[in-house]
Every structure is written in structure tokens, then in C-alpha cells.
Image (cartoon, rainbow, N blue to C red; front, side, top):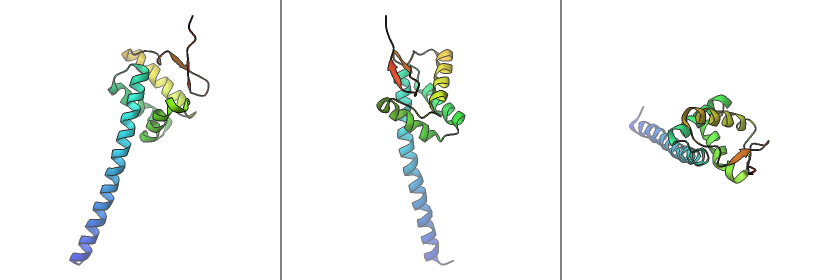
Amino acid sequence: MTDREELVGKIEELQEEVAQLQQALVSHAVVDQAIGVIVALSGLRSEQGWEILKTVSQRTNTKLRDVALHVVHWPALGALPPEIRPALRVALTEARAEHGGRPLVHREFDARGGVRPRKTG
């Protein structure tokens, strides 16, 4: 192999590594945002939000970054995909039972996985 071929090979390896690192940065930002949504809605700590995302990912066999994207868009859309909704509900219930926290900001899930204000009085 010539020096030129070695350099071209190394450049290709480095370009692939850069692309992977860029994707990791994007995924990390989305995961952090999803943790923030969970913390804001549940009153749990960020470490527990991370555990909830991992649990939902494992229980639904969905990539963590995809679960995070659904959670980030959940407040704006008002609903979660049907495969994510029950797993998130269970994970939140388990985490609140173990660690405290609060109900989902005085809201409850509707049948589609959206949240709606609780009736008071």
C-alpha cells in the first residue's frame, strides 16, 4: 500500500468518526431535552429521568434517541405513540413509587397518551 493510499484510508476513517461524533452530539442534546421534560412534568431528578428513558427504550425495543424525540415533542403534540405511551406511564409510576415526585403537573394521560388538565373540585 502506498503512502497516498494510506492517507486516503486514514482520511476516510476520520471522516466517518467525525460523522459519528456529530450524530452523538445531536442525540445527546435530544436526550438531555427529554430528561428535562420528564423532570419538569414529574418532579423527579435528572438521574431518574435518564433511567426512565432507558427503561422505556428497553421495554419498547426503541432506540433511546427515538424515545427521547417522542418525549421532547410530547408537550407540543399532546400525544405519544401507542408503543411509547404505556411504557412511559409504567416507568413514571414505578419511579414515583420508588423516589417520590409528583403526578404529571396536575394532568393525566388521555386515551391517546396526551395529557389533559385534571378536573378539580
